[in-house]
Length: 182
Image (cartoon, rainbow, N blue to C red; front, top):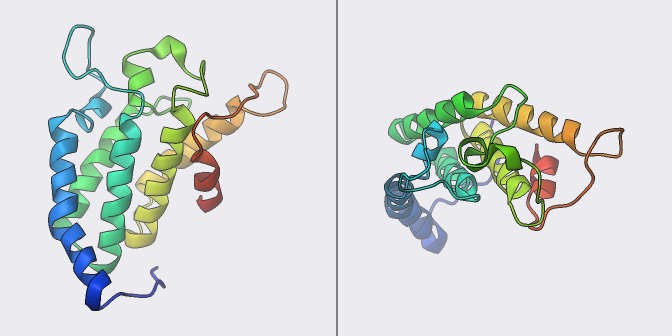
């Protein structure tokens, strides 16, 4: 599953340990405190605090990706459980057509795919894909990979040169790299 070289000492090892022990837990606390993880519950209502922002899903995905890289070299059952809980939230949040974006599902459902340049949907999708690939490579987890494959299939049905498909490009690169990794 993991054929990557291992860093076993020195400067980089110390930084990787600092990341594992301090940075990843601190970022998780911030994601919880600011509502980014709970946004996947899709229970936000107008007038309530912590309206999900258009890029919040990417913040959670980047944390999962970083955590996955630490799991690759240092298994941690508690960290895996945290990730699994978030992945289960995402699975429940994903729409039947495969779409997954907490902001546009909960806050602006009528605005899906209406502004590729500014709304970060493809950017967020890309980070979700990158995180799922990293998690799969680190732990063998396929649940998150299945979620993002459904999302990628949805994107493939929406965009293209076919009849009724949208044409366009994102205002922020990320989906391109992610689809290659997927």
